[in-house]
Image 1 (tube, rainbow, N blue to C red):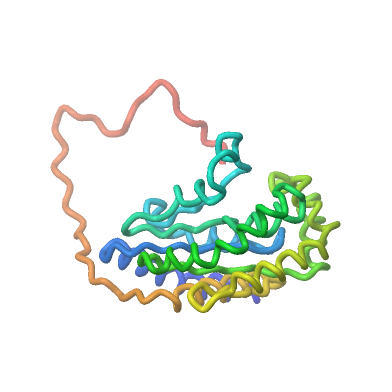
Image 2 (image 1 turned 90 degrees about the vertical axis):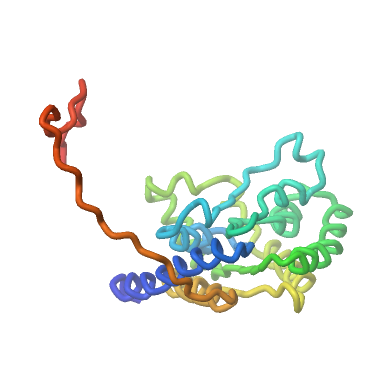
Length: 256
């Protein structure tokens, strides 16, 4: 897909995201969207397109770091629940409680008992979320093995993308099949009628972003809310004692 076509379609979807935002604020809706997937699959990219034209006070991007020692002593799910939406909020989880079924299981950061308990408890936990009136959507972005390797190589070559690299991420290249098994088990156990998974093929990043956003909008029963738009008022007359312009000790040099 050419960039011009992508930007044109994206703008149409972003208009709808603004309408979704207005509806959520007006109705007090609470929405959670979970973004999971393989490393380099494009979770951060699609989230950035969703939040690009909306208010960060309504759309909250949550990407939690590794748990602290204090958080490790809490209930596993506790630090995620703390990020759940209040009325009129939409929370986008850039990875979520499903870390336990993915990286924690593959890398040995949890015990087998902890993993089994999570897999047993997460379906009823998510049912409770939905029964409480929260809209919960779950997306898994999938990328092919060859494309993942190409994207990692691109990150290594591009200084702007170096911050995206970590030993944990690159280890996922070597452990491709371990992650495949873990994700297959996760999807099989947690794809329920109340909280289904939606797979997003993402070798083509632009199409994946548009497809995901369009699907997300289709799953939320929002309506266009009429708003009263303000008119631009006339400025008051300039007082005689006031000079034009603002003056301070330092002005940023015009280098461009």
